[in-house]
Image (cartoon, rainbow, N blue to C red; front, side, top):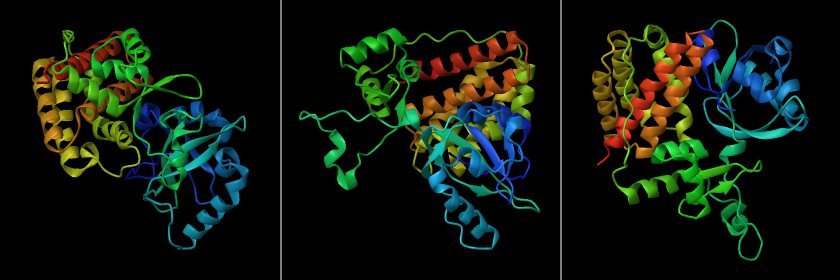
Length: 342
């Protein structure tokens, strides 16, 4: 469960609908005030059924409910906040009673009443699968403190797009051990970010031919990013860094650079000048590189922003033709960036 800071007690409806992570808000009594579509999918409840109910009874496992309630009471009594504004991992519970790992970083919202709000991230498929050692024991058994270090992993589709190859090729490379992969408990392949970076470095300049951008203005996109661009960027990029507290795209210089890029995106969506937008995107990526962002980090930033914006447009009932054009635009931007890597 990852709770990101939003400077208002009222979470904007567009942000709620567009978020790739679940958003849950509670009041001072621990009762649910907001439960967005992503939270519905994650926990298996309908929003209408949980509003006004105690969150602890819904998504906190029985063994930790009292600790949750005591912590909330301590906050209301002015006690020291042990879990506010920091990321930790906990176990959550779905409607069917199954449990799963989540990331949480709780914040108190501004306003006259105590309200706590945030974004919920399921970590189930983000944890690398332990591979057995030669003797059949888990490889992590001898690691310090009994656990192996974790790193960011990518899905099959994400790894293929980052490398500029098809998912079929990515599967073949994984089968041939050219691109090492692990399996989730559900049998899905996961690729370590370090593996993708290694292959990108070995291959040098990717042989990617960028698709053409759309040839029309995108008024719905322009309106969306003018009104909510900064919030959508924050939603998209906070999940890039896993357990780390910071990274270029969420730090001051990165937020400023992204603000300029979002302005260029809104302008290009009105004028259909997508070559100008490509140049602005290149400027953003150069700033990110100078700020220490890796190639993969820069690629995923564009990809996640594209996913968030597209979902927001769909939720707004944007005409299908424009949604398709927006997807085409971001594919053009991503491919141009990968294609220009020296």
